Image (cartoon, rainbow, N blue to C red):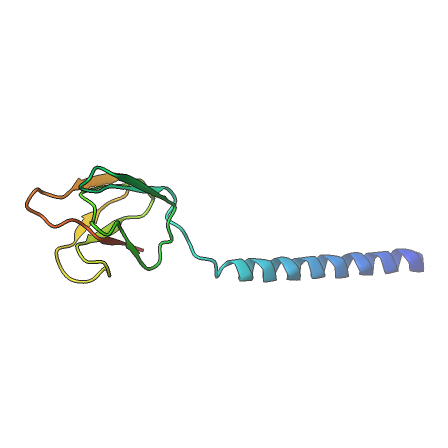
Length: 118
């Protein structure tokens, strides 16, 4: 075996190790990115205005239109909880499973925010 072949093998091993290390760092760096609920959340206000939010983050409280929503369709892959308040607090919540929808009864308060169940 020649010295040149040995040097090439060492360089190849070092290159492979360096590449694997960089890949591991890149994956670790990306793991901090926010996960999204794949699919749309579509809601309708009392004035019949329809709004669609595509793949929102699964973290945090999401506010709906200031006047609130009267119909909502959860087209995401994650269940949601609807709130009558703007800050996802208090009672009177409604659970909407993935691929389902819900309508506020005529005597009910509109939803003003939602949070994903995860």
